[in-house]
Image (cartoon, rainbow, N blue to C red):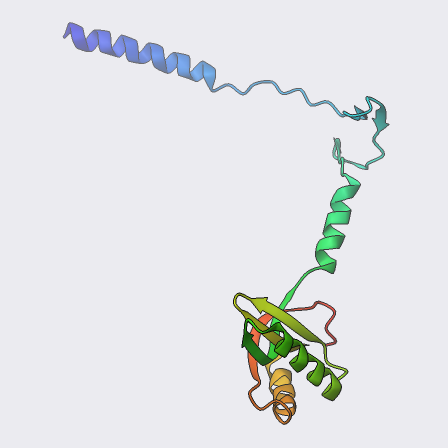
Length: 157
């Protein structure tokens, strides 16, 4: 009986102590209007707009990164592979030049995936357009076939 009484006293002490620790801490929020550059130790005034007492500090480099990402973004699409050779780059270059003579308006790419050199052509987003262009190219290069890959973002839709 003494054990249960001692246990209940200890438990009640812990529970009272726990209630005090659950009280929220007072928070002090200060608006920063001036900040210092860490390299040159010069003051930089914030000209950012205030929204509900908050000041938005946005670095200009973030906008540059977003712009660079959007310029270099790749799309999933199709290219037509017209040539593949194991360790023979000269034959791949020759196949690419023959293709450019026949189809000067279609972009061509020389791709190296170890140990093969491949010539892929076109930047097509739609499977239907890719099949139409494949039939046209197969008249000159009968072994050509479609390949799913990332294509340039500057594709004319």
